[in-house]
Image (cartoon, rainbow, N blue to C red; front, side, top):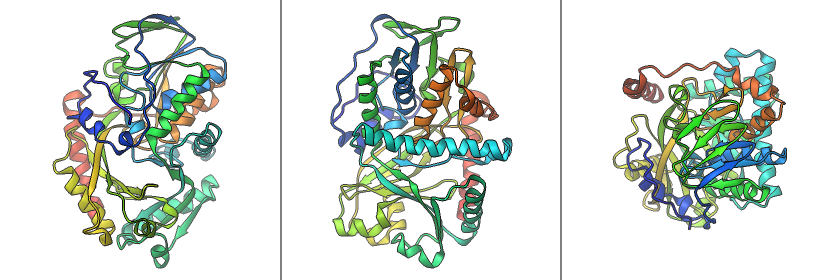
Length: 440
């Protein structure tokens, strides 16, 4: 079992360390060697800040290109969203609407194709490096009623015609029972490219790849200051990294390191539970081919069956940074709503949560603070595959091939309104409106 240090880092989410320690992923991941904190001064080509999927992918790709790299992580590798998410690796962006609205048809297709490459990159890395992360292909996007099915069908037709993506197939209402043993869903989409995995095992698998490639990794090394200029310096409480380039991949955990990025993303608490192991035959009967499932509500449920026959279910969010009360009971109720046949047979054994970083338009936010300081953030809950390709295109940009990175820098983002004091209450009010829409 992996372990977490007590670093005293606070993020605003109540009892986040405790929630992390309750994770099914943490309980089922073999321990990885600890990487000592930064001590003294190091000089490299690139300093990567953030030991999640985006940071690790960037570091790996930079080493492939011959750059020397130091990676700093404030806690343990995979401590943030990379090691705590719902485990669903999905093609596309959290919202393609903003990209479609701002880009030409050709450029929107190019951005979509980047995410398709990201899915293939994830699967290739798993195979090439023998990463044991319980990967299972298949994902379904399901509508809970006829009204939402109409919108989903429009999205399906648009995606196939505009992006030429032929790995989606439509599930009619009459056939939905062949795909999922649940009365909740009307119809949906089956995706053969997307899938699901154990995210902490995958993240630590990439960490081993980075280590073996020569990345110098330091855990418990929170970046506390960034000196900008021709030769940036990133400082921790015990050391510093002198470099030519910096890549910031800490998302909502960067704190005040780069204040100008704070207003562009919002930390949102998300929560996942895992049940007791079910009878294998019962577990096998729930979802065809054990595909991952997500509904198309704005405040959505997402779930899958793990290789050890548990239901892994996410569906609660906190826009106020406060952990929902009665989390286990409410998630249990949602599981039974989806699968009534599990009543009396299932209980919540693990429940955990943490922050994801969302943008106002739910599109990713990649860019530069200066010519040599890059950032990757705003994956908006859709980053398990996108983080990997984001690291690759950031490394390309540093090496002088910036066309794909610059495509993403063209996405316009608005700051969350209200500043530090009011943006959270404003977002809470907005989400209440969307919850009411989902109920219609």
